[in-house]
Length: 320
Image 1 (spheres, one colour):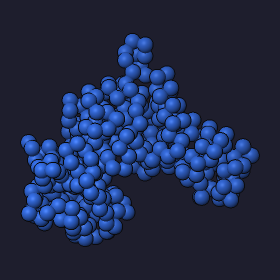
Image 2 (cartoon, helix red, strand yellow; image 1 turned 135 degrees about the vertical axis):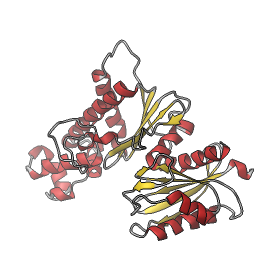
Image 3 (spheres, one colour; image 1 turned 180 degrees about the vertical axis):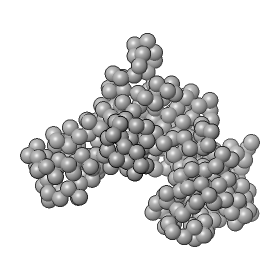
């Protein structure tokens, strides 16, 4: 395999930094990881450099793509804010290029994952794609005209903070009623905890599982019991699916994509959740019956999407 066909993708998470050598078809050739030094920026950048050097020959000009949560400036040279590392308006790209002696492409991790799905995964060849990442909150990316759309300041993809319920549940962003307060893993755990807190008899299985301790209830626990057939937890999954579908309807109304790809921590209840979401989306999309519905697809590349997307973006940047 020619070295020009290879690039390196790096995905920085809250607990570990993943890196992989990726070929031009989006296949991972080799993968490594290190612990994330969360509060030590120089140590984190050294860890990235060590991973890259271990994956590729130091003399190689193999390009590197680095995906990180947070906001970058318009030319993607600086990280303005990252929740995982203490990067605050830092010239990350230039520092990494100086350490590595090779070109570095800096990209938001959700954009990298969405790009991978567009190039090699569920949305391959689709014109206009919205990718949603469900986890503790809701993030994602927009790909229009074969390019990642980043907006005027580079801060697109904060889908979870569209206001769904004015005056609703308080959100960490400072507002109330954000979408992710109704359609995320955190929302599922909160609603399950409320059932336990009220001593609801319909939630007896959930109460047994958490020993009547609301603080022990998580979205993963609710999902697990729903898959096992518990009615109360299944109801919570259905309610979350309805909120998810309504938010998708809003996004499709504004952006008119050909496909909405949904990934992230859906867990074992993802089939039921997405079925409810799609049904509710089809019931609430404006102009339904007189316009095509965007396809709803489950993401295909899983936890490797960020690595693959960052590597491919770096390769394309080098080709350009």
